Image (cartoon, rainbow, N blue to C red):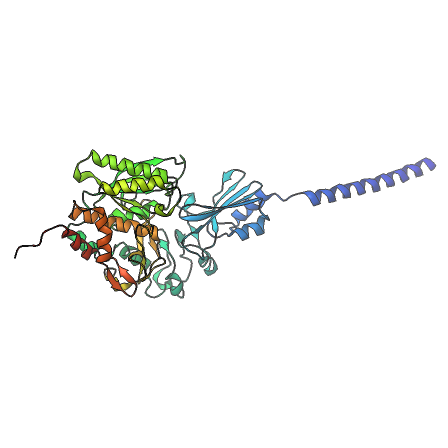
Length: 458
């Protein structure tokens, strides 16, 4: 009996010790165990909590906690925020041109593999906007809005960009008078009398424009047949076409949107438009090309949507620019040292050929020597070979190719023209409105026709 009693006592003690050890290890395990972030992310994607363009960095942090790393960088046409967690990587983007823009999710990978979160970056899928709250925090390009009633959102839509992929509700659920399809079509008009010049055969035919920019979507229907040469330098093999090039080419030579739709293009793509040695090398290459080609097949205009004149370490570019000017080549850039010019926005619904129908754009004003239309117009985009975007403001990057296109028209009507005359006449012939001096293409071309020509004998 004593032995049995002792055995029972030992069993009770052992049980207590085992319980305490189990509790101790369990508690320790509970305090040190980390949640499986990959599983949390997978579940959030499946439930729609993480979705393309609908998720902000703050939402991801609320789900996964504070990230291990965050890194913000310039991604060309947008600012990019890279966020890292164990097994989870995300990147967010926002427009550089919209100061009030917020970062939204553009891509997600879990355990090293890209996850389908919707959106055009995963093929042609679209974000299906669930409610007005979502509607007011995302960009309206390539989104499905058909579930919404937008009748009271007219004022909000006047400030929003959209594209030809955007799917809209039926007319009964749209604001009175707002017709995005009409805006996209009418916005292709370059405006200010450009199409009148085209009807006269002044369209840039036989004149070459070289464009130095980022990787281009080469087969967009707006300009594919205008690309005579395409070269790249130092670009990652797997980098997709970037957003910056298609608008520039469409504004310069686009079939519907372009200032000089019959000019041909030599396109030079690099990792950035700000690499001055690359710019200089290509400018010098263009000069040599012209020396061995007939007058009718020469590059007379170069468009660079950057400000290389204002940058440091740009000596090679400045020497190349001088050589180009001496060789009869006009170079358009965004720099105030090239021309102190700004941008205009068309009053929506107004006649784009009337200078008085434009207001001061984001970078324009009465203090500028000249103002160029960039806002409330349609441009080609990198999102697809037939995709167009309705641009609300536009920047100096869109103004430079407009001037380049006008220079091509000028060389067509006066092949012996000296490049330095072009800026002088653009400013001299401007129409003056409340928005400041507005470029006046018909008056400019008429002046160019008569330069260095003797007066008619009476």
